[in-house]
Length: 430
Image (cartoon, rainbow, N blue to C red; front, side, top):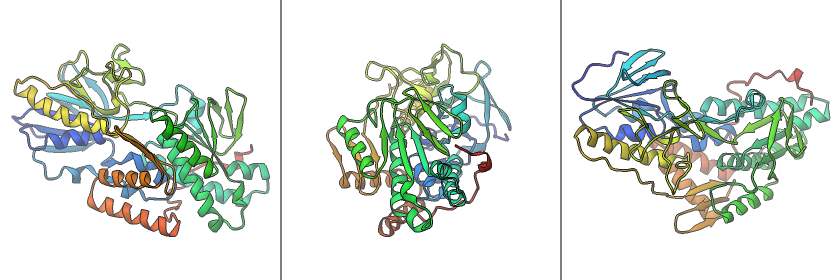
């Protein structure tokens, strides 16, 4: 890897997400050598991926080069690599570009889509956890309407314009709202020779409410917002299969669709070498103590989505969101220095800053620790918070200008098929 030897302790961070970047920043002025590894050379702002999928933003406005984030920090090194295995006893990690020793290792690998073992759904549905996946979804959505223009089969045309989203969390709710607004304001102008009124957006939730984890009022209001936009909300419905044409459920309810978006869950992106059954908790997450130390491994830590810190308050670990990862990164940065200096470690205490979700134009729900609100003001708060946490002045300005333009013109001009999603429509017959 050509990482120079140093008298400073070497801290290897796997993953350039919210947790990994937060930790690297915290260690930037310390007498340590930091090596960050990631399979992408950019930090991805995942909360806005749905806007890339629906043509509201281009991918470069929510991605930022990792090297640029940390380019002014001394003793920092970045390598583009896939980590293949951790050899904890030897304190070595094996990657596709070589091996590297470490003094301290931090897993910040985040999460990946959880299909709960259903291989058929995994093969035929669309996920939305990465920028490439979001671009694939954007292409497929647009290709479906282009194909709908060409077919004389009314059932095939309806299936091509029927979108099913599985999962009623923030990702599913926000995507459903965005698609509903496209149907209302953009499709009639783009496809005047297609009866886009027949386009359907369905969101399916296995539980009895949307936005589980938020307040009952936020959940009900989000459902009301979606139904006002024309979204069909199906609760207490568990999807059991999707063969690329037909969605089946436990309640015998079926949907003919060319597009199923799976937003029903995530699991930790574990790495070989730390995947023993006794180490992994529910959701494929690595068990850590209150200092983010991986149980049974010296000098190995985990933060963010991959880590599960169980307690009375959080029996299933902290929410798999940005804020716990950012806060754990900051606390762990302090603790690693304390560990090096032989000082007592400080336990991690999560400060809940609230949850929010947008449900389209002028519609959002916000749950803060001390008060909750919905509607237009919540929508402005949602926009401000997301702009604030975007990395890079340019990205903030580009996203802000895009939002203002889209709001005034009621448009989404990034609806481009830059990279076609290869699907054999000849074989698609519902």
